[in-house]
Length: 129
Image (cartoon, rainbow, N blue to C red; front, side, top):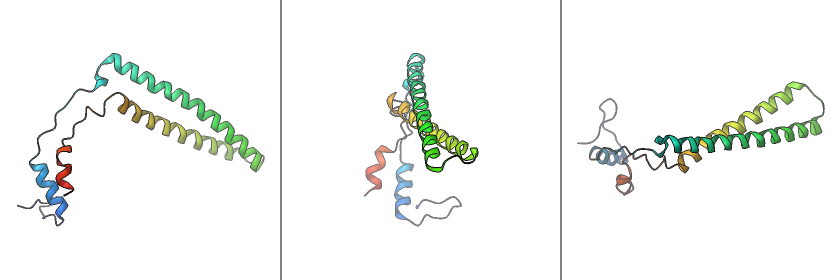
């Protein structure tokens, strides 16, 4: 029987049919413990994350100072709002990038990514046939 969509309609494309049939026969994924469940290791990993954020905060301040100097040299003395907006934009963007990339490094470096098992690896070959 072909798979059905949200409202009971049959899905017309072959990829969805293969995918849904494969998922119907799949085994429930296992839940493995994350290395971050250990309090000592979690404290070490989060300490490394916040150390990275402190260094990136210093780099952000240096970039903001360089950008303010460049704006003053290129534009001259204009409204203070230009400098405030530029510094807030640069600072927010760099710190957001640092925080998100730091979380990626934290997840990958601690083995937290390997603890996730979504059960899809066994179906990859079937989907691309």
